[in-house]
Amino acid sequence: MNKFIRYVCSLLAVILLCPVFTIASAEEQHRTVRVGGMPFGLTMYTGGVIVVNVDKNNDSPAKEAGIRENDIITRANGNEIKSNEQLQEIIRSSEGADIELSVLRGKSPISLSITPEQDESGSYTAGMWIRDSTAGLGTITYFDESTHSFGALGHGICDRDTGMLLPLGTGQIVQAEITSITKAKKGVAGGLNGTMTDAAIGEMTLNNGYGVYGKYTAEPSGEEYPCAFDSEIRTGKATICTTVDDTGIGEYEVEIENLNLADNSGQNMVIRVTDEELLEKTGGIVQGMSGSPIIQDGRLVGAVTHVFINSPEKGYGITIGNMLGCYEQFGGLKG
Image (spheres, rainbow, N blue to C red):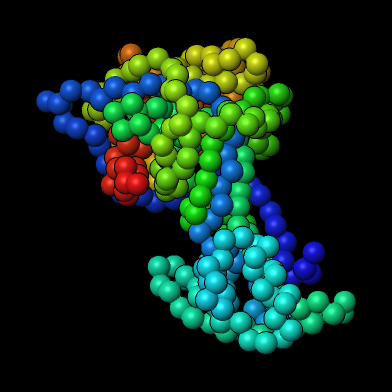
């Protein structure tokens, strides 16, 4: 493997900003969706490759070329870059000749030229670490039969090292099976452990700060619920639908302790798990439960997004209005 290039897959909940939206008005009918709560596996490839680290200890080729962390390399010598392996092969076969790169820095496209150098083994290297994919487990929030779409996670998929929202190239979600639980403790995040199957659920079309979205390819399951308007969400008792073992989707009691509906990071609710069975099984909210639907007064009000590490029985939730609104605002229904 190239000394300066490595590949890492991760799925991490990082809070990202997205404008606040609310669905409909009080005079309009409630939108109805099928509530999820089932686990899914995700494999996502970025559009281009992301630079997660540049070797700064020496005058490396990447440093000399002006490449920075978070840069997205989209082309090399005119070739569209779709994988780590593809860029690695271009570097390896360069024999030290300049490589012209097309790079996306933030929203600005720039052109850079890099001159690979030989390492001790004689291989040509670039002096940077890159990533092109990520994989992990999460929970489906809803299926919307009116648009043939799904929504999940309630937060974006981000690079674990840089915290940057990963640009979506292609992505697929498949059914998953929960095999064990790493129980949460104060200061230690727990998690659901499982395996991904070959049964495809859908194709991703959007990864933004409020969730993962796409078109479902399998018949949607789940009970139909109306989506709550923001004005209908209140503090008090609610439930979450989630899968933590091989018994299937369970409904567990929680308390909505605080509301901040105008928060543009998606931290719209603070919820606390009160269900003794769930607390015994998981210790509270754990990784893999992101996207678990929150039900109150017979309506879908939102989804679980993040856990409080020092109080794992508590976490944040995003409203269903923000999930649906952000998806539609950013073109999730196109294509």
